[in-house]
Length: 85
Image 1 (cartoon, helix red, strand yellow):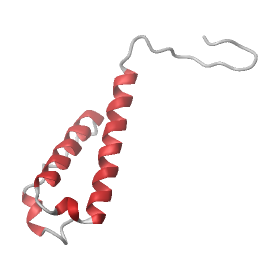
Image 2 (cartoon, helix red, strand yellow):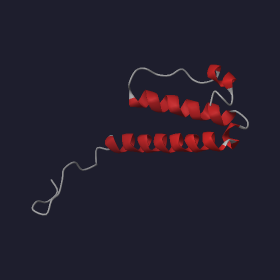
Image 3 (cartoon, helix red, strand yellow):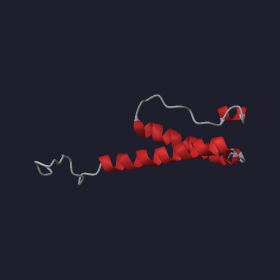
């Protein structure tokens, strides 16, 4: 990224060090918006591919967070010998 546009370093959001998934998701969302806001960057195939991968990963993480907070979700296991409990 910096090889293509070295001036972007100042525009990128500050990296988070808290270790919280929510903070990392917010950082990635800000990073995605910054990259999409720069004209021509998403036209470069390698950047576009990595940006799409990052967007998919963030979407999956958000989905998993929502599922893990769902109080109606069932927790347990099922085998051939036992039912879901």
